Length: 106
Image 1: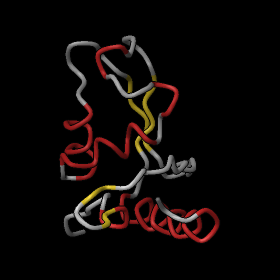
Image 2 (image 1 turned 90 degrees about the vertical axis):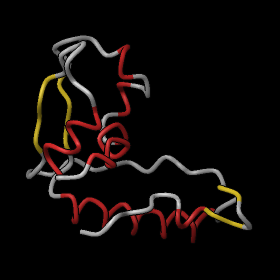
Image 3 (image 1 turned 180 degrees about the vertical axis):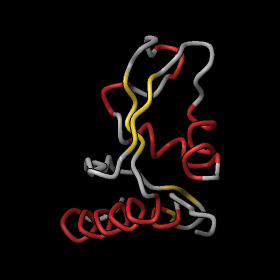
Image 4 (image 1 turned 30 degrees about the vertical axis):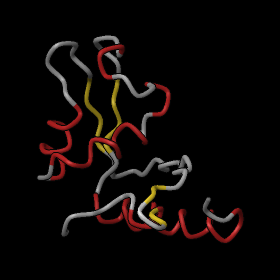
């Protein structure tokens, strides 16, 4: 899979529009791991599972209960890794398209 630009659909006139929250559905093919404070980093998880460190945002998006600050996640917290990446990104894009049709992007 080539480099994915998660902001591509949200750029207008050099500005980035509001990026809506898009739920990442659970799949039977997803992986799970456990967070270890001081060791686990989402960019490294992204690299480990996807071969690319730039999908850390996707792992956080799939775990909204964690918030967006890695250092506040307690050790032992279970982390879901959406897998496979290509299927997850295709569904994410389809959900963005649906969101845009229903609500528009601004």
